[in-house]
Each structure stands twice: as structure tokens, then as C-alpha cells.
Length: 321
Length: 292
Image (cartoon, rainbow over all chains, first blue to last red; front, side):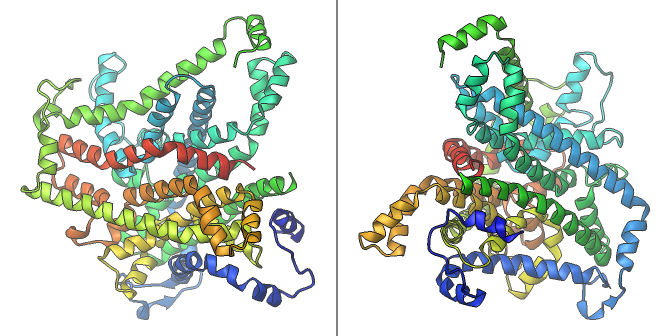
């Protein structure tokens, strides 16, 4: 980050800044400020910095199944080579991409639609908003079991419903079938998280100046034109943050595939995180699992860069306003 | 608001099919959202035999509360376990929430008000925590908890949940503090209050909605967490609800009504809490996190 940007962020922060003071002097002057963030930093340092360091180290060693660190041997980038050349790597990566892209796309679109439809006040709006938010609030474990029951191949409600209206004949397999399982799980995931996009975009919609919309209306813009040329550009900042958070969350999903299918059948719902779990905890292949984790860190850092940039843009704007 | 212009425009555009599209969309979306929950409740009112029928009984022929009484009966084995899980979840989530607020409030305030070297870097380091999945932290954290002597205690969960809840808590609260005019504190300072007094008497009351929102978020996050609870706790007496429910399922794999009743009871506290306090949460996002 350039110092110019940094200045802009601080413009609204009060207090005189000794401009010529050295870093050490400035840190000394604000030594009490650090006390406020010290507890948060301490906790995060213990629980985050150490694991990250440890994972990176593991990824360069071959560690016995017992995880006894005294017996590990240095193997350089062997673990990474194993990851990238394994036959399953591209299958799992492709499934992760499908999972992440479709989940994010549909969550965002449903969320946007709901936010727009709920923007205008009407009787029962708060209740409706509350009902739509429930999936986001309930535990993913509970949601997974409920959907597992809905998808049940013999007694599931969805299959029975499809049979009764004549769309299918006989039992329908949603999650025990390797061609449909991934998509069946994506439906669950979208059900669980579209309301996160909804609530973010609802908040964003409230910041769209009413005067702009009214002006466009007076100029004869249709509802669609108002949405496309006024509302949507105003939502750009919120949308970027929302989409990034959804991508990160979906890429890191674990509970829904783990509980509902365990990655099966025949690996058709295996995504990166469940695969890492399987490598590390079920096969005690610690080094390869750690190598995956480090690659994942790198991907997350790239996404994190865009996330921070999206957030700072907002900060700049506020500081400039 | 209906103004003359608006109704004139509507006349020009003909019937407002745009609005009807929105209504239809909401109805369909509501169906999609509510259908699984309704089916969960209907199933939980059936006997095991009634649930295993084809075609399904869309409405239970003989509705029964037996699944609920069995789970909540402290004299039975299942009831004993379940109430234990419930209590553990409540305890862990409550302590996590209190600690999260205590730690996040000063941090968010400092990030909002003070300018110290490294402020930006530290703030984004805190936010970036959100980007890392729980699974890759499992092994090192397990080793760490062993070293700290916290394995099989609720302390391991509380410490972990605290770090994982802090980033969003700090972010939400910072947004709130950003919107509280600095002049209020300055006025108090001029009147002789210390920085700390100004914080306690001026800033804290104004940020109550933010603190409520943060608390809901922390509580729900801790209540629903599964992966760490699944890894760190092996003693049944310590287990929290998500792990307990999974255990229940692995022991009674065909007892779907019992499982649905358990997921229902597990969902009630967080759903009620959220519905009652949702306006604070929405407001926190609107005022703090989104508005720039």
C-alpha cells in the first residue's frame, strides 16, 4: 500500500501528527494506544501465527503418521510435487471451482433479487426478512441433516414430490449419485448463504441516494434503466466485498459436504477442504495435506489483497468526503 | 411515498409488472427457504414408523411429541446426554460472547480513533484472518491446545472461537465508532473528563447497538461451530450440540424424527435470538460496515 493512500485513510483521524518524528518516536508516543489492541493481537497471534508457521514447516517435511515431530525428514518440495502431479488434484480443483462459482453466483443473484424486492416498505417486510435470514443463522450441521433427509432416496420429500407431480418415476437419487451430488449440495449451500448476500445488499441499497433515483425517474427512466444505471453502479462497492466474502467462504466450505456425503460418492463432492481433511486426518498424510494448505493460503492471500483493496476504497471515499 | 410525478410515471409505464415480478420472486424464494424447515418440524412430529413410509405422510396421521419429550427428559439416557450437550453449548457460547466483546471493544475503538504506526497493517491483518479455513488450523491448534493443557476442556473451544469471531466483531464495531462524532468526546474532554471517562460515558452508550450486534454474531458463531468441537473434544460429557447431534445420528441412523427434533431444538435459541435482535444486526451492517 502506498503512503499516499495511507494518508488519505488517516485524514479523518484526529490528533496532531508529528511529521518529522522517527518511527520509534512515533511508536513511543502512541505506546498507550497499543494497549487497546494488545488483547486482540495477543489472542490472534497465538491462535493464528503459530499454526501458519507450523503448516508451512510441515509442508516441507515427511512426518510419520504418529505426527511425532522428532522423526520428520526434510524432503524439500516433494510434497508440492505430489500434490500437483496426483491424478485427483485436477478433479478436486475442478469440482472446487464449480462449487465456488455456482454457489457464489446463485447466492449473490438470489440475495440481490431479495434485497431489491424488500427495499420498498410494505406490511410484514420485517417478518419476511427475518424468515429469509433463518437459514443463514441455523447451524450448518443442522441444515445438512435436514437436507439429507429431504434428499433421502427412499423416503425423501423432494423425490416423493417429483414423483407425485409426474416428473420422475421411482426413487430419485440426489446425493448418492455421482452426476447430481455436487449440484444437490450446491443447492443446500445456496439455501444456507443467499441471505448473507441479501442482508449486505439491503444495507448497501439504503446508501443509494433517493434523489438520484427520483431525478432519473423525472427524466423518464424506466424501472429497469433506473436499476441498471443508478442503483447497480452505486452498489458496486458492497457487491465487490460481498462477492469476495462469498468466494472465500465457499472455497473454504467444509461442513455441508463433510456431513452430507463425506466427499462421495466416488469423490464426486470432494472439494479442496474436504480433500485436505481426508489426506491429513484419515490417511495421516500430514506433509501433503500441509502442502495443499499452503497453496490454499496463497490463493487466499490473493483474494485477501482484493478484499483489502475493496475495503480501503471505501475508507478513502469516506476520508475524502 | 406517492408523489404526483411517481403516479404519473406509473401511468405512463402501464401496470407495474416490475413490482409484481418482485412479489412473485419473494414468494418463490420464501417457499425455497421455508420448505426444509417446515418438513423438519413435520417429520419431528412423527413416529419412526410413520416417517418411513412411501408416499410420505405430508401431514402426520398421528402427530406426537414423543421425540421432544425423549430428548428433554432428564431421567432417560438420551435426554441426559442431550441436555448436557445443550448446556455445554450455552456455556461455551456465552463465555465466548462476553470475552469477544471485552476484547473487541477497545481494539475497535483504537482502530477507529488513534493513529499509531502499523494501524493499517494490523487492522488488515486482523481482517485477513477471515480468509483462512478452519480445517488447515486443526492439527497445529490441536498440538497447541495439548501444550496449553486445554484438550478436552471448553477453554480450547472458547479460545479458538474468540479468535475466529474477533475479526468481524472488530470490523462491525469500528464502523460504529467511525460514525460517532469525535466532537462529543472532545467536548467531554474539555469539560475535564479523561480519555477513559469520555470513552465509558460518551462512546459506550452510543455504541450499544453495535455491541448487541457483535454479541449476536459471536454467540451464533460459537453455538454453530462444529469442526473444532469435533476435533478438540473426545469426552462425551464435554461435547457441544453440533457434535452431539452427529453422535446421535451415528448411533440411531434411521431415527429421522428424533434427529429432526434435535435439530429443531438446537436451532430455536439462535433463531429466536436473531429474530428478536435482527434490527441491531442490520443496522450495524448499514451504519458501520457498508456505509462509506
